[in-house]
Image (cartoon, rainbow, N blue to C red; front, side, top):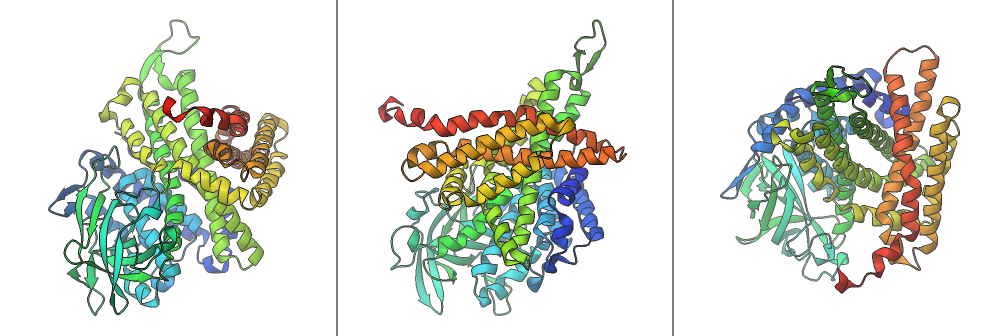
Length: 593
């Protein structure tokens, strides 16, 4: 069974040529991110992902986390791999140096994270949740909480979780009923149960720091009455080390379709007198603070989709090159050939690859925008970066994860009947990818946020600026790229028409606009992905014209042309679904379903 190999050529190209690594590294906060350092980190991450994490991926699938008597034992090898992960400093790569982090750009940590997720999705979830906890505490934590928890979270000695969902409150967080009773000295006792808590209990770190949504006694109903609390697995002693066990226990873990190596816990708080926690920030602002963590998680879940898709593609390519079946089309009486020679197999592989390259490019460009939003000395540049990132994070999350499901399914199809057999490994990628379109907000939740908060609320200002940039880039697709340019321009027009319709109809006809929200998210993803591939093609053409013989450049032109012909051509149909699809979705009577 093949192992994951990081696609370093494309990663480096996208980072440098499309996302602008040089410009990011020139920001005052990132001047230590020299080209030599960045390249060394990418090389070492590729070695760790392929040599340590990838071999554990199949083991995690077949021998997942186990629960017994409130204790979770992770997959054999996970604990040792996590120790290496921490000792090598990977957990703190993008964290604040004040608390022991390396302070490197998000663009670089994004590339590294893609490798973790592609090599071993289940393992990567643990550091991902920890990063979200770090971001929440950095922004909203008290000085005491930061001092007590951040150094060990940044190093990875401790891990973090996000506790939102309850048995009676799924995505409707207004229904949260976990309660927090003040006991003095700024501490609270937490009572309630949380479900679907990723790495809520495990044996890989000496402490787990739970961030928990709960209501104080006099809190108003709804989302305005939710507060956020830090509830550690082990209470801290005076010297800051883990001490007495807190009243927060794992009462079971879920049996899931995929990501078996990742324990998804049901946590009970307060069954033995109350779990001790401290308030994060101000009372009743918990949802606001938790969304800091959730927004980070949503972007990273998009990277999970990218990683799963890349891994499925790599496995399918290996199989297509090795599987001998049938003569080549048009060669009468010819020898049997690898299925890679068959036109439809090539179509499937290029469908996978072109979308992966588009997803990677878009995600990395968004990561660079986040770097600018945080650290660009120019205020206008910071605002522009933040607006672009806010607009595109739902797309990175929703479009990438939905694409990953389809790409992983195509990977099974490439394998034929063998893809349906677990031993080939192809099925695991589909099972693992399937959750990504659900957690941290379903695709519909991402799409509703996109059309509501990110487009209708500001009358399309940010997306119209992005569309203007798309048109400028499409104008460069001339000559031998004219067909790509024409399809890009047609797709941009379809997107522009859909934006105008949403802005005009959102307030007066919200149900109809929301019925087209997911198609709009797909539309924006496809057009934005094509935009980035078009930019890549212009660069590739120039490299070839200058005499560069690297086969990477003609391959980039081929994937761009394929994407234009097979993905961008979907834009017009999606636009029509957005403008008129609400009628069909809403007219059927409830009792007719």
